Length: 494
Ligand code: FUL
Image (cartoon, rainbow, N blue to C red; front, side, top):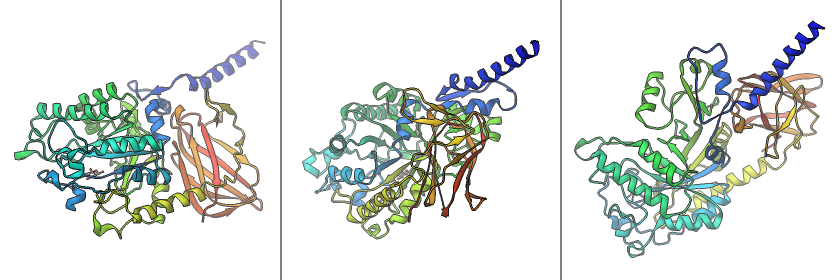
């Protein structure tokens, strides 16, 4: 009898440990205890979850950048800041065309360069005369930001602003308190004149001001203002919610942790942490188990892949023939969205103020390929079964496969089809957990490996040569805590 009681207590304890998985979640970040026992850091990192604004952002998957300013008229990438505002004259500007095209291509947000490094403002700001108000366009009465905002409303598109911290026009740049005030005023206008803003993009590119003066940005004040005026907006790159993936090529890491030891943002505290760990957004390893051992804290800091459809960020007539074709865009999709990142694809309007037919052709090609890819889930929504259990996630109609062990296998009934793409998703509202997985296929009693991978995160896509199989097996070979697999699908694409 005594033995039975002891055994029952043991199982009860085990059970309650497993249930703790549901209790302990850390929104945004977690600080590790000093010298924790083996495995504790991984277990805690697995329970860091996104803020709701970060989760909503991740679900957008594909977003668009619009680089447009005086550079569009001077054939430059980085304007000097002394260009005459009169040069800006996009006579056929049609922001509705931009948003319609981008929406048709599957983009869910548009982020515009409200001000690039040259300092020219696309809205009639009160902070400087270097803006559309001094341009020939619409006799100085136009407002590109307003037109884009209205078009976004019409097409139900999210809206974001890029406001370059580096400003080669502002006289006060380099007089740190003065410029910080000026920058906060510009931010205030953008965040209060145009309704809801969903992302604020702080470029990390930074140069000297007049006479070699360096500007000390008051990042904390910028973040505080955004939290106050637009609490749901994510702040990106030099911001705290969204991380630069580290390249501008369109390719994210194969192992992409959204929980990083890299401290977000540009504050002196964050800089000190990253310096001590030797980390920057371009570091290959931002979240491995080995790195966690050196870190004191980890953060939900997911990757955004920014890349231009053209060689440059701005439109140049000479690049009309150098636009990435549909195959390249599809490859970028697999290497960004398919690697646990959000794609931010730049499509710059030309000097008429329109997206060219060349860009449209590639974009629509991408859309057609994605429609074809996702047309038929060959697993037909089948739930994994086997040793795992399914459990509904609170308040959500989706069901995660939540196996009660870290290492588990699932078996899927036969599929009478050939496939060459696999899609996996973790329910990241419960954190990112999977460290390694393998997909195998059985044909004529023989199991063969179809694909292996490390991280999954919000979305992982794998491509491989055509496979025909009687049975499929997904095995999570390593996970930081019980995995929550919300999707496992197989597709065929040409
Ligand atoms: C960089 C900038 O210098 C480029 O001009 C472009 O805006 C790109 C998105 O970010 O840092």
